[in-house]
Image (tube, rainbow, N blue to C red):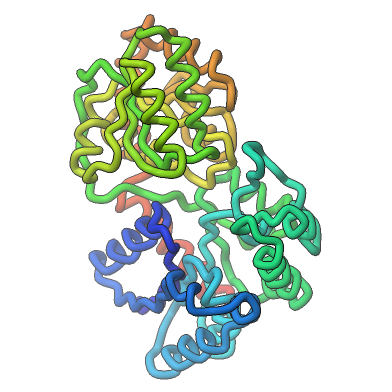
Length: 388
């Protein structure tokens, strides 16, 4: 199969950049020809706000690039991983004109929310959900804290809703979880075109032993990730178990301050992935305290691969990934007291913790391997070809 992957890289490299790269490399490992058309958000700096808004709505450059590629070679699939902001939905039209099936992976909530997160002022916000014109996001300046720039995003969403782009120009949408799928349907996306295929971990990092006697957090140090809840819970725990924090971000100073105040909290900053996996495999459990609607939770799946249970906030996709009582526990999102209580319960039930380690690894093997991902992706590609 010959596939054209289309991706707009984030300005700050994140997990979704890595996930799409892994998917592309895995397809190549299975013998498929995969070409890449990629834009980098660093180009945004060279555009003024008007140019940026116009390009976000319709990029003639991206349209021509994709059209030319499709004319020069025979492709079975155009798989768009991320078109925002430099590529734009114009690439759908280029693919459709050439009769090639179009798939769009929805790695965030951009088609329903200008800032793509459903998160504002430290809490979940659904003000734009279901609105034809997402004007609340403009009033709040939700994208880059800038009303004018947010207006450009809102214009893109509104124009393409009016053009029926989202309903007519994409054959299949892929969400990473059923939670994200239901949010998209709630926002007016066509249910019959949305399928679920999670991210995966490859190569298999192997089972850990869980002998480290510490808890672990891995992720961006930002408000939506629930760092305040995490640090407050460790204050309440009063030294019952050490916490290691891996990651960097805007709240790094708060984490440093917490580590100075509480000797049970250790900030490790960024670490190579090999070291992260080692620490993850030896951790007693991983904590995933997010306060927003995660579209997935790759760190949780990586923990499962190492056989490490996850204590997760009962919100969004992460609550779906972690089965409470089997592969980990749930706590009320934003509730530090409840998180501390769940940690104490797990510490008091070592036999249950050992069982959860086995179940976590089994969950990975059943759902999140490269083989399982490949099988599901091929089913989607074949379905899309039959629809076009």
